[in-house]
Figure (cartoon, each protein chain N blue to C red):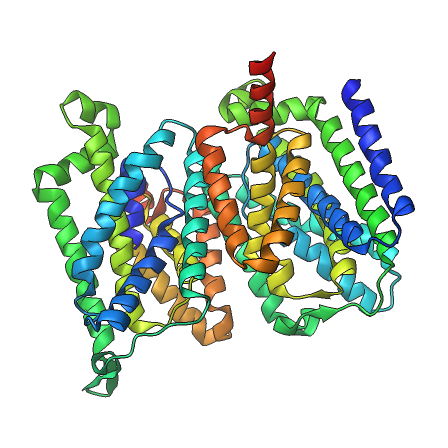
Length: 303
Length: 272
């Protein structure tokens, strides 16, 4: 209950920021990115954290969402109408991917997803008639920043609510069982492949919608930005740094990631990923539960 | 490179995602020694191989050992982090500019009947073949090589028969890293490169290793041949830019259809 009240307070604070400071565009833009990346990290976490299926190819779903919006907008669709289509197409595609790849386990699954991610990027690059090839696609119009802000905030809140709901549901327990021991889970009557596929579809749908918002914000998308391996990497790093398998972890990771990246990228290009590589290694070696785990331990030591 | 990957996987049962980074470093070392000290790139492996062997052993001692007993995904993530670090350190030191090694030897070609072959390609081909033969000899004929294979087959049993498993782990990791760096050094003669060098090759070598069966050395050689044939044939029917797609598709199909690779397939056919 305390957690629910806490999150409502955070949500309310985030909602009044634009009212208090409507012209602080830098702050609004930064927060927008935090929400967007928070949504993406939360989506990845449903599969990667709850079910323990680490995917290095999640940018594929983001890319499909982004391209869906760009292509439909080019055909004259209103932007808001492309949102659900982007999510639906990404979810559909994830079914296509999930059915074969979920026959693999652990590290094999992770490697296969690298292949899937790269394959979709190459397809986007080469299918020029639909995607514009390497030169990418441009959106003609964009909603004002303040609309984007609330859109991303709403998306983030909904995705966190879904993730929190899943975590304590029968479905969530099934995912946790798969994470700790797939064989035991199967013996106890969990249809592991079906459950993992469900998690993937939910995750892909949310990423598809996030991709749509991504396209609206950046106006320009190309195979390397939307489908890039760098995007897939960030999706893995954020939840792990924050605290894999938790609700607040991916959000914390996204906030740190976005702010650090914005600061570092301007002055020292490449240093951002270097820093995240170091953080990733340090977390894996010393605090597998992420920053949230570290925080818990510090609190316990005090108390 | 594929061999390094297979060796590390076979012995330590972890998948080394940092291999691409090592490959790239091997290429840069070769280039740097040529650029700064005018060292012939053909001699570079003499320095690169021992250097990276030591680097591999130290890496195993310092960080990899800590995660060996945990779930496979933990070491995967850790080495992925190492790859990120290596790649971006290279960006900081050498910038993103594309580098290439150009010596008279690298550009020289020789006519063989109707074919025009570059000396560099012949050299790389021979060096690769000799390395494989040497590795095979090492693994089958020497005490240490046999210990490595014993650990790859059954760690507990090897320990019972008196094999120093920890030492074997470190040596195998060192050899794996050294092989990757050697491959990078060789490839720098053929291709120009930047810090992203190795990413695609990494996937290809995964593909090769998976195709051959993750812990079978003969299978790996088969895998390499099979993949290059698939790519060459694929080129006839589709655009060159889609060439990389082939390896990914092969990778995914193989992982799903016969996860034990060609060797595993043959084995089960023999049994059935």
